[in-house]
Length: 119
Image 1 (spheres, one colour):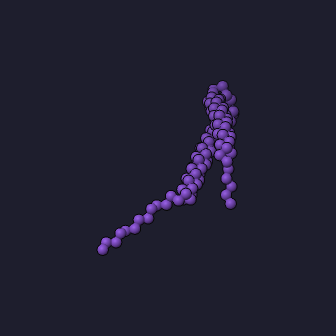
Image 2 (tube, rainbow, N blue to C red):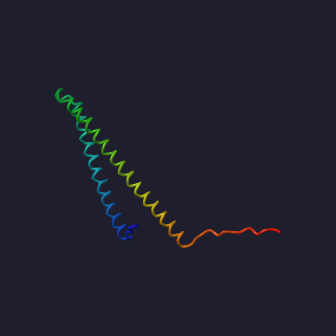
Image 3 (cartoon, rainbow, N blue to C red):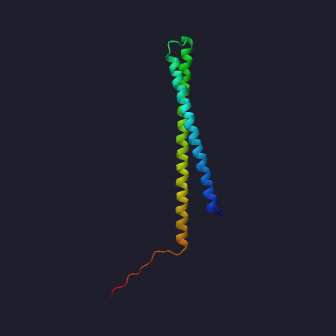
């Protein structure tokens, strides 16, 4: 038994997905910009002559952790983009299969030709 969704339901879901993805992208951009600012600040303090030497190592460690965190955010973004692409591809394959099934049901069969016998 195949459950079919109305086109309105699919359109509504895709609009919701688009708005969620758009929101995620804007939030991720803000996160990356904030982390980049924090990385620059921690580098500045790690290199500053006015920062006590005992704290320079802490600032350098924080910069390293923030760089790792930024990398994780970017990796998740790549994974999400790949997931969205896979969903789009899956949808296209399903639509193609449904179109092929409809065409086969309508009787669009290739014509079979018989050779005339000579003789």
